[in-house]
Every structure is written in structure tokens, then in C-alpha cells.
Length: 176
Image 1: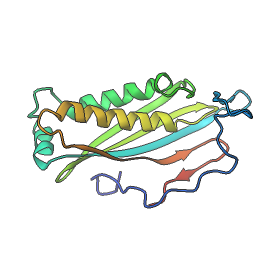
Image 2: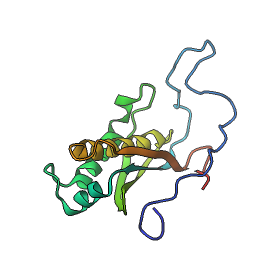
Image 3: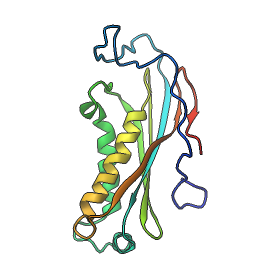
Image 4: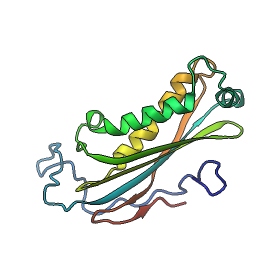
């Protein structure tokens, strides 16, 4: 999140794709789960971010707790954490991982958005980027679900990987 406590800055330009091609296809072009058995276990961190844009009145209702379904941001936080833990059930070739930490922040951004940030950690042979992205996406979908009765025009935007650490490729950060 930004230093001022309100939201974050989205990336300005996409980073180039790594060399070597797609990893989830074998020599014959068939989809495969990547074999990570020879990779060393290292500490891994991924940070993903996104926003839910909405009418100012919707954000005011979230802040005031004026929705019949309860604490929107609290429920969305739990949904995102649960989703990170279930990522391998949702993404076909994603490895099931023993996550060591999942933290979600949902911050109201005046006048018309909720900023979402997920930080996911593990120690293992593969990264947690998909878990962080899944956490943000499901948290955003939960905000939408809980508020759709008063605002069907909400938009889930700017979902992206902001940072990853660990493994052979080391540190990667989205361009700002």
C-alpha cells in the first residue's frame, strides 16, 4: 500500500515475459504440471493488488456498515484468505502449497473505491503468485457480491502481481 495509507499505485507498463517459453506445455504441446521436485525450497513472497470501483454512496454504506449482509471488508478479507488456500483447486496446473502466511488489506479509497492487497508467503520449490492473485480476485468478488443490491455498476479493476520474491528468479517488481 502507499505510504499515505490510502490505496496503492498500479503498474505503469507490463514487464517483459521471461525467456524460454511457456512452462506448462511439454515438447508435444500437451498441458502438464511443472515438475518442481528438483528445485530447492526457498522463502517465497508474492504481493498482488486490485481495486473495486463503485458509486461514492456504496463506499459510504460500506464505511458506515449500512449493508444488511454485515461487515463487507471483514467478510471479503476472510474470503480472500480462504481462496488463497484453495488456489490449486481452481487453477488446473497450479501446485498445492503449504502456505505459511496470507494477509489481506482492504482499504476504502475516497471517493469511490476499495483497494485490495494480498501478501502470501511459503517456503517451498515454487512461488505463490497465483495464490496472491486469487486472494485479491475473490476478495474483490466478495465485495461485489455483498454490495450488488445497491450498486450493480461496480467494476473490479487493476488486478495485478505487484511483487514476487524468492526462487531462482529472485526479486521482481511491477513497473510503476
